Amino acid sequence: MKKILVIIMILVSGAIFIGVLFSSTIYGPNGEVSTTEVNAESETKSYPTRFYIPTLKIDATVRDVGITKNGNIASPRNFSEVGWYRYGILPGKNGTSIIDGHVDNGLALPGVFSNLKSIKIGDNVYVETKDNKVLNFVVEKIEVLDYNAGTETFITNSDNSRLVLITCTGNWIPNLRTHDKRLVVTTVLVK
Amino acid sequence: MTKKIFSLFTFAMLIIGFIGIGGINKAHAADSDFPQGCSSALGYSVTTGSPCNGTNSATVGFLPGCTTALGYSTLDGRACSGSSVALQYLAGCTSTFGYSTRTGAACNGTSVATILPVTPTPTTPGLPLTGAGGNAPLNLFTLIVSGILVVSGFVYLAYKPKAVK
Image (cartoon, rainbow over all chains, first blue to last red; front, side, top):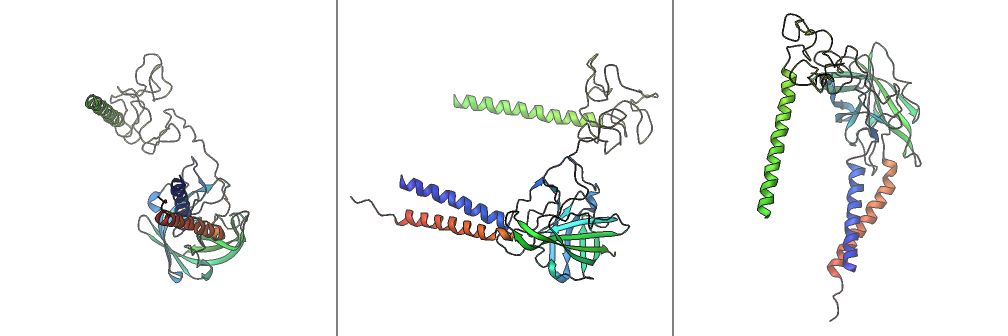
């Protein structure tokens, strides 16, 4: 009887160990909800696929992300990938497109945007699209906003093509389980 | 007896498979039954301008007992598409909402498209949650405790005291 209890304990503890390790390092649930709305951009051949910032040694796969039930932009499920907000603008089109990425994972190890705080105005940011075009953006503004600031402060319908990069920064708010600030880097398309 | 049941089961699966494949082919046939630029035998081709029914004069409006080009007539049970096969969805449509991606015609088979019901997506969504490092202490604690339980469980099973005879 004791032996059976010990085996059950091993199985349950093992499952918890694997589950926590997996969710905190590889796959982070992002709370995305499915909507019946079609993507704002239907030109799938222009979807972004890779993202580079050579000065920060960032080279990541781009996944498209939607929205959470709270109305926030969803974050990528993988801590080493970046997410392009698919209900917004395609990178390279006039207006503001958005790419987000994690600053760290569930074990406080660095995420894809852990070095984004070191970016400088004038740095180059590259986005490669599905049809193998490489878009070159240059950083024009770096700001830190409150976690609940909303995106209306930087989404513009200008004639220029802008790409905004977002990650978490600041202090952890335990009851909200998120950081209290967001690092927002605005870049503009140069070619 | 077991062999008989197995044979019957295999036979039934084969029949279901054939019916399934037949259904798929039928659906494709419905799609290719009409001239280029046509979703049904009604009206004119959007690419060539020729009548979709293959004659010199187009069938305008819907067949008797039909309010769209989809489904069957309520009067005579014939396919409303004007073909021998009733259409579930028009070519280039995956539902009855919106417009065909192939012909641009309304997917509900009428002249006015039904707008897709949407879960509203905010035009200015909130900022994303892009960090999980604050969960690290709890995650580490859980990993350590569960790891210790697994290891000690194995140790107990390996070295448990033998029953005294």
